[in-house]
Figure 1 (cartoon, rainbow, N blue to C red):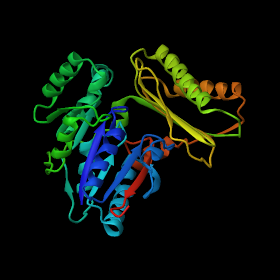
Figure 2 (figure 1 turned 90 degrees about the horizontal axis):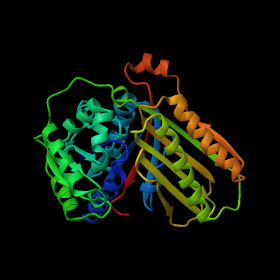
Figure 3 (figure 1 turned 45 degrees about the horizontal axis):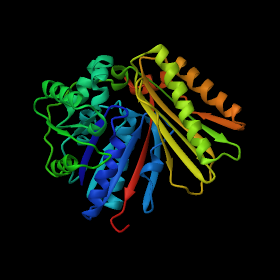
Length: 366
């Protein structure tokens, strides 16, 4: 069983990249499983990764140290025994350190386990800001990588891509650097698939670092269950876009250079919309998903932002979304996952944020 770890900061394009990789693996007849670790308990990428023939399971057993040492070990053992995948792709949360994940897995005693080179994705349009906002955190993610992927080159000026490449080489001269657009699956992207077929190499053990502290990220997630209302697909697109724009404007007042990720999805009886922003400067990206019947009418929010107090982030998000829901005539109920961080600190030491782990299993015969 080969393990591929595809890391990168929030909003660097990990999910899109993984979708392209699993398509190629499926075409090659490989049985593949994906483990996705979200920063908050409200998952949003499950619908993107879920399709006919995929089994999705959620694990909510605690903070990332538990997820890796207990839930992930159990999950990998179960996959190995019951599904026997050829490849397991791990998409860690955007504030995790891929090297530490590999070290944890290596201590689990799993049989016949091998590793592809560790991949870290970089968004060149934000890399300079990332290096300034969270320098120690970004440096660790870059140095963990064996393959550094400069993504989104289709929407980034050439000079910015070249400057990012130079900075990456200076930070990790041993890594292979690839430049591509995962969205368009270009010729350079094919090189990533080739390099993932070779074995990764084991780096010397490093001192364990607290990724949450180093990232200086405040995170908040919420689920709103909505009452039935006649709301067109066009209105839902506008609603998601308006909320993201307002949240971005208000967060920018507190940190003009913020980076991170704000994801918002809205499900209505016959339509669904998802949108996101990844920095103070990015225009909100909103997409109307293919029409299908939705049993649950809901709004999901997942946010992780640098250098903004959590209570301020919560205040901005709740007042924006709830104000717009009321203005649009929705009756709603809110579900928020909050945890006793003191208990986590006592039980798990350095980690204080609870995580969620989704497992999507791609069967060879599907």
